[in-house]
Amino acid sequence: MIIIMKMQAKTGQVDAIIKRLEKENLKVNISRGDERTIIGVIGDHRGIDKGALTRTGGVDRIVPVLRPFKLASRDFQPEDTKISLNGHAFGGDKVVIMAGPCSVESMDQMMETAVQVKEAGAHLLRGGAFKPRTSPYSFQGMGEEGLKIMADVRKETGLHIVTEIMAPDQVDLICKYADVLQIGTRNMQNYALLNAVGKTDKPVLLKRGMMSTIEELLMSAEYIMSNGNHKVILCERGIRTFEKYTRNTLDINAVPVLKELTHLPIVVDPSHATGKWTLVKAASKAAVAAGADGLIIEVHPNPAEAYSDGEQSLKPKRFAELMVEVKRVAQAVGRSV
Ligand code: PEP
Ligand code: MN
Image (cartoon, rainbow, N blue to C red; front, side, top):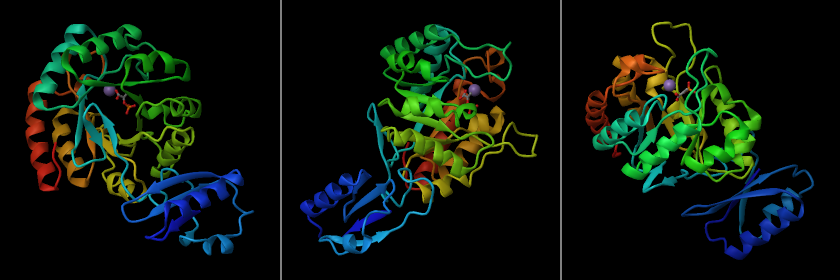
C-alpha cells in the first residue's frame, strides 16, 4: 500500500508514521516530492488498522498497490529517478549515450573507439570483457585483462565504463573496474545475479530478456532494488518475434509503457534490437522520439574484423553522423544530448 501525505504534512507527522510501520517490521520507501510525501509500504500489513492510520495527522489517503512490483512502481515514487554518473544523469533532461564495441579486443581497438565516440559526443564507453555467447566455441571475452584495458582507457579519456557481469562470483572483480554493471538479456532472470548486484552500490543496466514481458523486466528490477540498490537503468534491446529480417524486434512501445509504470530510467539498445548497422540510426532516432533516456550503441573501428557483433556495429564516422541526427530529434522532443 502507499500512504499519501497531505500537502501541508509536517516532517514530524511523516516520521511518526514511519516509526509506527517499522514497529510492525514493515519496510518503508519514502518519496519526498515537491508537493507531498508518499510512503510506500512493503510487507504483510494486514495487522495495521488502515482506518486509524487514515485518521492520523498529516495523512491524506491510503491506496492499495495492486501491481506486483512495488519499489520500481511509479505509484510508489511519482517523480523520475535520476542516476548521476561522472556529470551525466540517466533520467534527466539529457539523453545519455553509451557507445563502444561489443567485445574488448585490444588496447588499440578500445582507445581508438573511445577517442572517436567521445569526439562525436558519447558520454560513456561500453565494452564486454565477459561475453555471453550462444556458442561455447565463440570468443568468450578477454576477462580481467579486458577490464584493465577499459580502466586504462577511462583514465586517458575520462569516459566512464559499462561492462557486462555474468555471475555472482564476478561481483568483486568487476566492481573494481566498472562504473555501470550490465546484466545481459540472457541473465535478466538470473536471480542469484540480481541479488548480488543489488547488494552493490553501482548503477545496474538491466537488459530486457529477449523473451520476457515488460512486467517480468520490472520484477527483475524489483529483485535488485529490494536488496538495497535503487540505481537501476532499464534497457529495451529487442525481443524475439516471428520476424526474421531483423535479429530482434525493437519493442518501441516498451519505452512509453515503462514511462507509465516506473520511475526508473529507460534506455534503448538499437544495435542488438536490429542486428544490422544500416538500421541502427533509424532505431536510435525512434527511441529518442519515444522518450528514451539513453542509447547504448555498438561501435567498432573495423566492424568486418570484429570478434563479435560486427554486422550490427557502426564505424566511428557513421556513429558521428548518427549523433548529429539524434541530437536534432532530442531537441524536437524537448531534450538535449
Ligand atoms: C551486449 O551488449 O553485447 C549483449 C550481449 O547484449 P544482450 O545481452 O542484449 O544480447
Ligand atoms: Mn553485442
